[in-house]
Length: 522
Image (tube, rainbow, N blue to C red; front, side):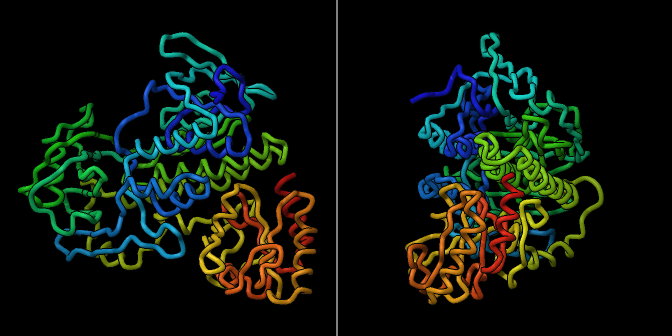
């Protein structure tokens, strides 16, 4: 098995956390020569980002990862119980419909990284550790990166492209001048620990809990090893104090917010203190260098969105960069990466800044917040995320409830549940679904095939005819696919490699489809 070490790759990925690993997997499985380096000599330990939302699980599925084994290694996130000051607790189920992964997963980040690392190694690429990027210089056709070894020696790598996924402290971002403006949350701090506990806390310990009181906020979550994650946002009396908190300091904060005066911790580990801030890079791309994950956006770790957002960055970027590297699209395709992903990071940072309560400043209106919980949507799951305003999205809007341009395609089981749509999309390429106006009429099927083929031939996009009989294509005798995708009257549905609709039109819109593909892949 080749490690690609000491060779000049088509893409160099700097940083081997979840985002860098996902980027490397997406590129490698599409045939791109990749090297991935990380400054740490060993994988970083700790649970850190331990909540994996539903869309991230879908992404892992579409990437071909062993999601079943991964789920077995974690704890299902079943409910969230909210405790607002003196108001009655409100229990909300975490389940979401329309996905093969209705519940989020609670699992340590080190386990996520181990799963991704094993999968990448199975594709023939191993992480090169103990290498720190110290300088980046761009040329017209290559990027020269100087890597410092653990012993102080320096080696040079010349890559066609570089993806910086190092985290908040990004050499790649600084070297390319992408900009980085921090917006701190003064007067507050986040204290965290993974521990076993005794004493009295209200509610089911198998649930995730959120407490809000005048003292601040507190979240809890069960972990696979029997410990619980406790993370408390409280006032920061001494901003000059550095270093991780001891158990007593975290316990005091947890007791003050929750009111659990008899609470005690045992077997604690991974004590952590962080001063909170949000930051988003001014641009995600400069020339042949791109940013992803915390190198592109660092958001306060209070809504469990950082890693999940970064994984979606990687999933969005991987297929686009592969197409450019392999000459199947111009570099203009990469403009859509920032256009789609940066607004999401900006919105997340703004929402965190607006809604976070950490015991400093005006006390929030707890009764109002409590009353709004029943109307809270599923945005945190990642499932509703869409790219309607993307330059890659075109066509007509469907009936309510069906995926339109820029929307995520749901997984659908046809033919009695034996064939999943994700099984088709997971091959990692563009997919064109052609629905005849009458799924049982051979003449209508011929028209749909002709229109779809005319639109997709030049771009080399495979066409999948969907009919009741499954003639030479996808069987949909029950009409499950047709109904779920809103194609009862016929449709052409072009699905991007990352599972979002790029074009939606009627069955006679082959010419419009052809024009859109020519623009996207030019």
